Image (cartoon, rainbow, N blue to C red; front, top):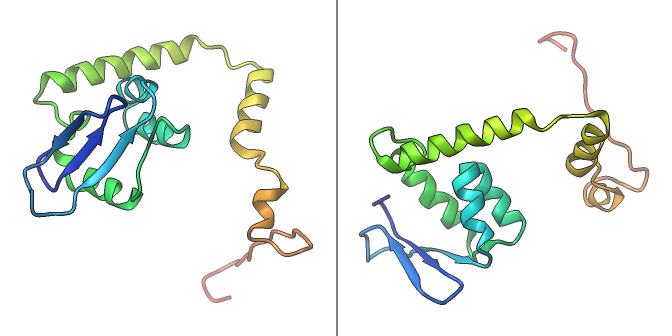
Length: 145
């Protein structure tokens, strides 16, 4: 993870810096919870996103953080099979998949998952629908109509 520059500020105030380019504007992350590390190790890029949504880390410029990760995707430990870290991350991913298999997905748990992921409430839809709260889409039977 050498391209560009990333500064990660830990809760204690210590900064960890990735990248060699001191001439660029660095992407900056602030770690707000130790859960950040657990989520990233166990769930990889999904864990990084979930940790952001749950407030475990933040930034003043999310686009620069995402851009930095994209710039360094080829050197990412989760993508490289050449490093010991990659082996560890992949092993933890397998462990997570096994744990997932043993979690029974009952009807009640399915309903809870659907509610948490898709039942967003009217406040969300009011942001982009009109007063009638009508959501529709166009249907075309072929390419010419």
